Amino acid sequence: MRVARQRRLLTAAIVGAILASALPARAQDPMRGVDLNSPEMSQAEMSRAEVEAVLAAAKARGTPADFTATRLSGLDLSGLDLGQAILRSARLNKTNLARSDLTGAVLDQAWLLAADMTEATLVKASLFQAQMRGAILDGADLTGARIAGDLTRASLRKARLVDADLGADMRNQSMGLMRGVLRSADLEGADLSGANLSRASFEFASLRGANLSNANLTSAELAGADMTGATVAGANFANADVTSARLGQLVGAETSTLESARNLARAVRQ
Image (cartoon, rainbow, N blue to C red; front, side, top):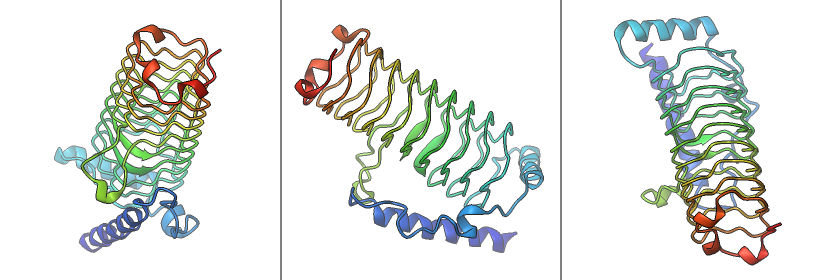
């Protein structure tokens, strides 16, 4: 067990180094050089029953279950109680985590490409530098979660991100600008009230009918985003780029700082 754990930690360090080296240049793809079809990224080293056994043993000890750098891609882990679990650098690509409980879980640097997290609970979970492109989080609860990861083309329809922190981490500039990236993501009807979205990227994302009341959108990237019918009462748009964004039928715009957004004249406002 000790050898296996040391191997996982070494692998996690290597993958983390690859990601960090790719991040400073925005144009670079952080997954460049990573073979997503390799067994390391696409195959599981444990069965669902074995995962359940680890969870049961951890519960008996009163400690968080540790799956650091464990390969769990493609497994059906739906409905499991993974609260407080440590899944740092774990491979969960195309894993079924629908309706699972990940409250307070640590998913930093985890791989969740195309993972199904429909209606999962991720309250106060940590998703720092997580790779979640194409993930499905429809109806998921991410209240208070820290999300500085890549959710490009992810689906978060009617997801709860109340008081979530997707803002840029200005303390780790040597690693590149770490913030929530939701380019072309679907957040229709999502609740982002009170969320920190400072410098987060929502380019070409759908925010139709979303609740952005009291959200901090300072310097957020909203170019091409569709915000039709969104609630923006009390939202801070200072220096947010709204080039070509659709801003029709906004609710509560008069109490927001929308007029301080950048390129407002180039937005679509009817």
